[in-house]
Image 1: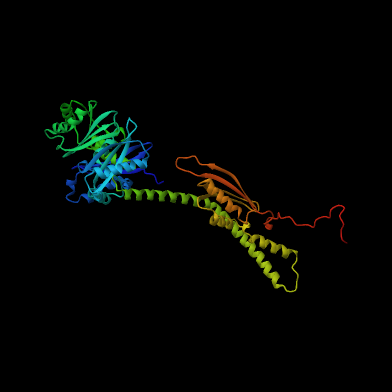
Image 2: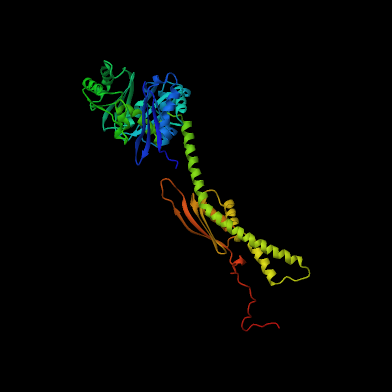
Length: 485
């Protein structure tokens, strides 16, 4: 009900903005919307034009992932010893606050961890200025709805393709800036941005090769380059000749299905939409490791999700208790009608002066007293239990058998809470006794607690309206005992 089924990715780091909408499809994703938008065609009103264009994305606008230019971000890596998540988070925070050349009040940063072959943890730390984050958030809120992820463009693009094993380089080619990332499997070892011009301009491949040379010299096992962004076959061939390496175009359709052929209908290579697709995937992911969205916004989003699930639980409890409440209300109305009749009889009897109440009148009075007892009123029992049971006890089923027993079923946070509940129930005067039928530990990754059932016995013969109360007779004299005549 509250799961994430659709999300939007907006890549606006180049002169041609690209937008895609993804929807969850089984264990993967499929493309539901794709468009390219040139800000120059908006004639100065980019926000309004883009918002109009995004109406075609439908409900995907509810969750949005936005891109950040890598040229305005700083990338740091560190090798951390094995440790608990809280300890590693403290180490990463120390590294971030000491390595980034920005005042803490102007810095927004995030990190991700990946295991190293040695058993240590490889930390990738990315930071940028708060002003850039605020500008991008304001823009996304104007054109869409709720920004939930902010990622540097080359990292989002790399996440949209299947990463090969071993060392490789991704080159995200833009109209002015090109971003180069060195990977060892899933671990990012380095990222740099180059003002190399348009990929189709003369000398672009030579400038990229010069920037790659230090990585090529220090990593002999580096033999592959994956091209992303504004690339063509000529671009790929030019880079292959200057680097003497295997150069391939990254295709995001290897990780995202495109059943309607949306990317094929658009101009350019599908590799140009890798960044937007990676952003939409990050917006759909429940456990996005690296996210430059300010922490207070992320925490607010988590609290909103918790409140949503709490509302689901309360609504389910209402649905479970509704039949019981309706049945109890009908029973209460019936008994109130009976009580009114009996009270009328009692009133008429009291109006008769000088007459001794007969057996029928005494029986009616006993019936009235029986109906007024708490154990004869299921809603009164439920009210008393709701007021007295300790926190941590959630009732899911309440069964009432008139004049016999009340059966309680539900879930307790712990056996200690359940023991306290038994103590409270045994103190209730409306029950003769209470028995814990079972207490089973819930074995689930998403739920915890103990499912239980308690049977509470009502006092025998307490409800005379059932006709089951036995008439007390004088005890017969024992054999051989003397009697007074």
